[in-house]
Image: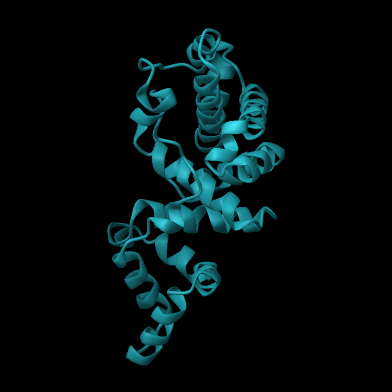
Length: 226
C-alpha cells in the first residue's frame, strides 16, 4: 500500500547535495565541510533552511539538476516559514503530497490503486460508505491530501469554477480537507504509519497551510488549467 508520509528529506539524491554545495560553498575546503554537515540530520536541516537555496531554485535552468522531493521540500519549507509554520515534519509531509501528486494520476487513485480510478472527491466519499475500516482510513487520508493540493495549488481555478458554474468554493475544500485529515490522524492505523502527529497538526493548520501554498502557486510555480 502506497501511503504518503513526511519522507522528502529521505529521498534526496546525490545531485541535490551537489546543488547545495554549489550554491553555498566557495571552494573545495568549504564543500568538504558542507558535505560533512549534510551527513548529520540536524546540520542538514539547518543548511536546507538557507534562503539562498530557495532563490536559486527559482532560476528555471536549475530545475533539472535537483530531484522533485528536494525541489518541493525547499519551496514548501520557505513559504511555510514565512507563514509561521515552523515544524519541519509538517513541511516535509506537504512537500511529499505535492511531489506525489505532481504525477496527476496519483490523485485519481485512492487507497493506492485498490479502488477504481475516480475523478471526483464526491465519488471517493461515496465509495467510503461500503468500504472496510482499513480502506476508509486510506481514503480519508487521500481525500484530505487531495483537498489540500487542489485548494493550495489550484485555488484560482476553483474560484473561477465556483463563480461561473456554481461549483464548490475554497471553503468547501477547506472544510472537507480539515475534517478528513482529522479523522485520518485520529485513526489507529495512523500510528502504524507514524502519521498521527503530522496529520493531526496539518488538520489544525489546514487553512494557513492552504494559504501558504496559494502564495507558492501564485508567485513561484506555473500551473495550468488542469
